[in-house]
Image (cartoon, rainbow, N blue to C red):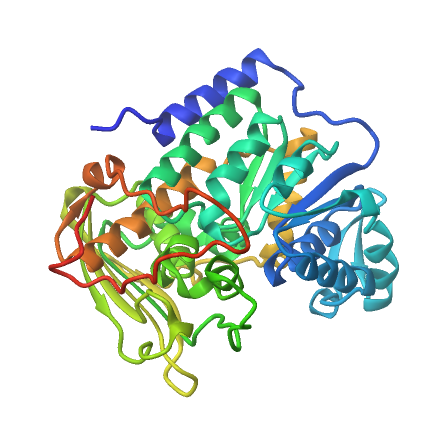
Length: 438
């Protein structure tokens, strides 16, 4: 049995820290300074979300392993790309609610992109420079394979963190993240994840009602995440060695992406853990490839996976995800079956909040400034990540995996060296019966 911190122990240390350090979350009256690690589309939008939701914040530093990604992201932020999706959102400005027009947003957001040339950090060590550049908030938006080392560095440096989900691609990395999450609680550092359902008013209200018996005792649970492929590079530039190619085509490789169940279907799995108030005790899963074959573009991840999770008390959760080509059925949904009724996770709400991608950043800043509840979502997001990894490893290996097995697994997928010109062995597609669980 692993002796790593549980969610309960983290909450206990959080409470103790709150008593020992009253007011520790209160920031100065000046603007908070944010830095972005990972300048792809998700990171670029996360900065816009942060600045839309909060007026007294500036982006002052950016880091990426590719200069073209950093400069492209910075250009889009300065131009105000992506603002239209938040036209007419009501947020706080000057201490009062204000409904922001597109013109308001265009005046409000780009001027707070204050990234000086000396705060453009490029390379595999760029994240270390950013966390030590005087920022207050570190935003972690790289592909998830890097999340444990980046999160650990941010917490060691005493920074508040917004971390995209998932938080690792293997059990070793996930446990590393868990240990850093415990340290964040001890330091009273705020940690909010990109699991935006936790900031979505309809989900919050519905989950609360389910937990208070609205549909009776939970009997079974179901989720689908049927989508198209998320991302592929168009083609491999002959100048790119293996490591650069795998970064530029990152969604195709298990070590950096985690496979669909970890990187994308995470949202459903995290939601079911939230509803159940815990993680599963066992899983048996299956999966494979139907169309992702015959081309190095597709790497070594599956294109479909189905998992039968078992929660305490024998409650079963049927989880099914797939990424099939355009034109196939898409469906992202959940179903919670209770003794007195059913819910899709949204349908019991009577109120509706603002865009949850913005609300999660409002919640983060309230936690940092001490004007709202202290938030450290590190352990729940890590447990959901480990749950997804548990399902993947069962599908790859063909065996049942228990929570204790995954928590003690020695699987470590991260490369031991990082270099743009590094040659890497061609990744093998996992085959049940041949693939060995470690």
